[in-house]
Length: 522
Image (cartoon, rainbow, N blue to C red; front, side, top):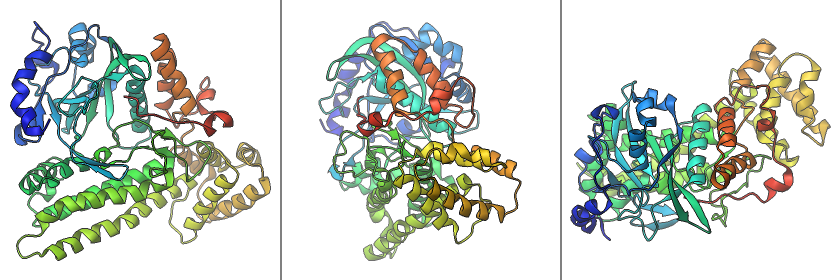
């Protein structure tokens, strides 16, 4: 179904999907100000979430509710759970399925869109920031492409967990406000318990959103979208004569910072399609994602990434490729007022070609912090690169190596023993440690202060893949949320070493990680 046909038919569909006899909710539950619905007609299909038979709250993010200015108790009450499940639409909401396209594994799909998600509306949080409130797993939409539009408990809790872990690591991310079991089964390879996620984002505008309209030659709509995004995310550009080029530059700079942060904690997104790259610079869509254990630049965990397109080492390259696709959509906006098409191409090319240097600056700054270095010196790049080569050659756990390096910064030879124990070839490790200590000592900082600073950027806990799977299996197969809650507690304090949480810092057995694969799943 095309977007225009879906819009024409929506009035007939609304009655079929709405919850019969649903009572109104207190207006105070959400205070919506829905700029996307108001300012961008034609960019979405108004739609209603599907009713579910027996909604039950699995997890409410009370801290995020407070940040959004929402009443957590009201959300957790029966009427609030009905909203979070999609059974009731709160007053002021404008439920809609956004249209977007995307390059998926390099192949262009001109129409994707929200096939299992609905934007309920937008709220202003306590810091004055506009935030989207969306449901994921809320049923079929005109963009479902034959899918059921539903989600299962496991993938919903994965997105909740990984999003909160990324938040705790200081990495820009969409977040989960709530996870609700639906009381119905969804059919995948087998029947699984269903769930709905309430996702919060700075916005859900993607590179693919621009591609949807550019692919149809709707350049005026691309301009409307660009103006909307500038007003929402980069308002200081609004009056600039080169605002569209400025927008491309800002998006590229945000992505350079984001991908560098991913790389410095060993995070692998798994599906860096253009429809999964946000304009806001937040990480979105935690499907076949994973955290690397033994350091391997070629690491791939996604079951559908057969060629390694989205391998760990390729993430900066793919980010640049995606940004080039965004740049293509903006070319008609630049080739005006005497600017030739060739000049427009040259302008965006300059931005795209600047991306590697922007990324490298963030990547190197992150590495210096992880190494405990306060200043930049020419030899630092080689020191960091040789460290990673050493980890790769000896198959050392990425997270523990960095964390134990922080411990080794403390005075006393015994502090280095846990680090040395990670290496089979201790002599090679000792040779590198000697170089690192000489470089560190040249700065003259107090060793305890340096160690503390390093521990603040080198986590002891990440969402270890085997523990994630263990927690999700317990929740989905046995309705046991205790492992999930314990793991969530661990990953939301990633830099703190706590008694009783030792197993959350331990790598999985090597035979388990060797064959580990993740799936889209939702």
